[in-house]
Amino acid sequence: MKQAKRNNIFADVKNMRILRFAFGVTFACAIAYGITWPLAFLMPVFTALILAMPLPKPSVQASLNNMLSTLKAFALGLAFSLFFLQYPIAYLMTLGLVLFHLYYYLNRGGSFWFTLMSMIAILVLPMIANSHEGLAIGFSVGFVYSSWLTIAVIWLAHFIFPDPNFTQFPIKPKYYNGYSKKAAQLALKSTLVVFPIAALFITYDMVDYILVMVFSAIFILKPDLSQGKEAGRNSLLSTLLGGVFAWIFYWLIVAVPQFNFYLLLLLATTLFFGRHVFSGSNMAKYYSSGFIALLVIINSAMAENSNFNEIFIQRVLLISAAILYIVSTLKILERYFFKAKV
Image 1: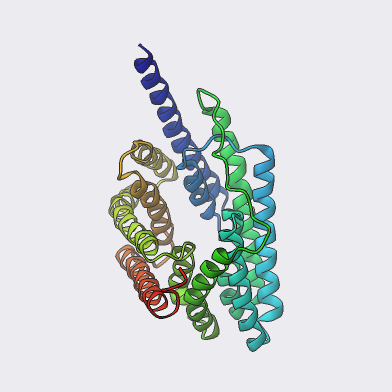
Image 2: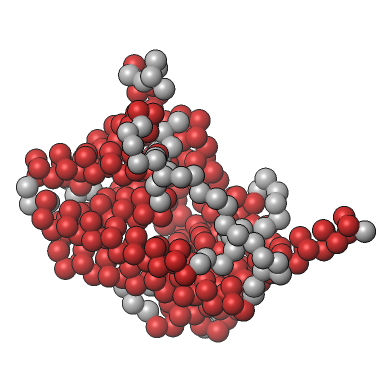
């Protein structure tokens, strides 16, 4: 009897999370593509990323902290781009220091969200600012606006589809304020991997390969060779999975180019993916990331004069290049410099 009751509760929680995921992502897309603003597509991406996690409704304090962290991260990125970029040598020195401190902060138990937002800001904004400073400011405003709206949609989704029972966030590791030799070594290794490629791409304005740089910085958040390989492999497999469904999704939209049909198709797709995301199987992680890949590929394919096959192949090649780079660099570092230390 108790086992049956426990199974029913689990099923209720799972079904509620599937419905919340489907509603939240579909509603976010309706707002993003119905109103449109710079970087509006990030809103459904962020919504899908967060609602795919088996987490309860965030507290008001946590939501405000995330909003403030996003604002601080892009303020840092803008200051970095608008003031240091005009002095190349000072800029490169500062870039290395900032990357090290961000990785060091994360390895001492710091906020993953702030670290991720800061990484995106300091790596992407300088490349945009190379073209025009106003574009960097517009990118920052659009990014922050999209992330704040995401928090509102997540609250709404939890209000309409609440968890059947009270749940709480897992306890985070306590942030360590003092000096940590291990955290410093891990941060140094991550920095030595990311800094050369970031310096090269930003200096020579290699915008077409910006994703290689960003993926490398994210894959190396934990500078362990096996974990770096796994993160890269998972991303590649998820992209392939999402690409297959994106191809079907794309041609259905082409066949029926109506906004209402797009939303209905998206609702059906999110329900399908949601069942697999919250299934608890080994494939769940691929469906979670695969849906993000689907959203990103479809958004790119909907742009004027775009080619779906070209976009998909390019994304796979860029992720593969990032994987090859971090694996090769980590092997060199671990063989010749960190063998006895880590």
